[in-house]
Image (tube, rainbow, N blue to C red; front, side):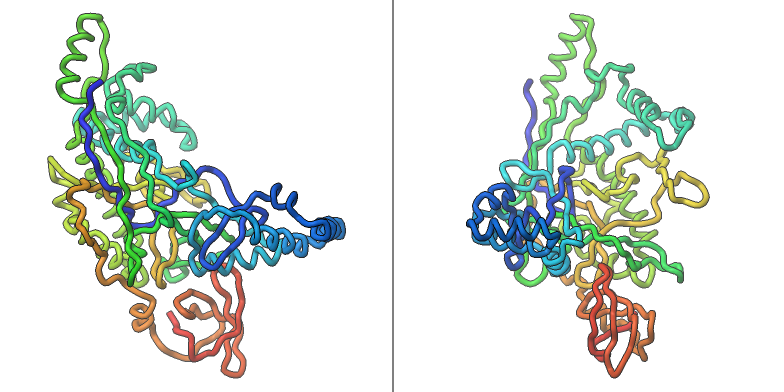
Length: 462
């Protein structure tokens, strides 16, 4: 089959995590500065000296897990390890404590890998393009949303409705996947450069008691490996675009194939996409999600810093005017959302979107979620999953996300005043809550549960 091939660059705008379903815990890694390195626990135990092995077994038998873990970690640090990822300051502190305290879980979710290197699978990117093309075809064919929504008897089980949606939009019968138009699209894996991932603690962004969105107190610890992104750029840290190739079946091949199908009584995809249709669909779908998310979650007092950061990231990519991008009939680039914490809105088209919310007190379905997952960069919340797809020849040689909000800029806007117990504060760029005050010191609790005594004059109130 002859295909038209084009080369693009995938540019992460915000953190992206495409997981492999695995987790690493303190029995499998060591921390070397800002680097997390993996080791083989079986090989490490086998390499223990006679004395070390006796001490290790004695510690296990006595239930001294902390001591056993220290012996294993010490041996591993002198043995053969493999680099996994860089670490954020927050995750370095939290995971280092887990190495010293076996009562802390200390695990994190890893990215999918190929040849030992984190990748974004072609299937993940193709899935985002598929949703966009589905959005286009649904509208073009004038399908009634009621015909799809009427098939949903239980909001937890939408498979029947999803199947029917694709059959109607892509014009193929039940079971006739040989007519699926996305069979004529191939997408390569995207392999970032070395040291292109970082482990970060995930936080939630939800409404507080005042009705504003913020990062609440949360007791759980969730760390994930994710791609570095435009939102990370500051100082000398620059983000390298990631190569990815996309191929579509050429018009000449489609003409020849349809002639043969007619001769043999077969029929393939009715409307196979070209590059313009793929990118047009991606933009039509994802720009609407981006704008709705920005308006709902990042238009308030705290969210304005996120909004400023996101706007600053779009500008150097030639995407500052999203309305024009969404209307472009022959776009050269696309806005997309990928991976974990992309939320259900990005994976379902708006006309028939029914997200299931089991914890909701009222209506169990919604067109848009009520929280976001993300990380905190320089005191600013950043959501997961956003990326740009740009032709390799059109990526600026030295693109920059410009003057991004920093913890310092944000703290200058914080209201000063006498701190009190229960106040939310910033200490060295991290959000915390004052638990006690005594003699010019404050006992503060960070998001992850860590508690420290710090000078009162070093705190900034929100």
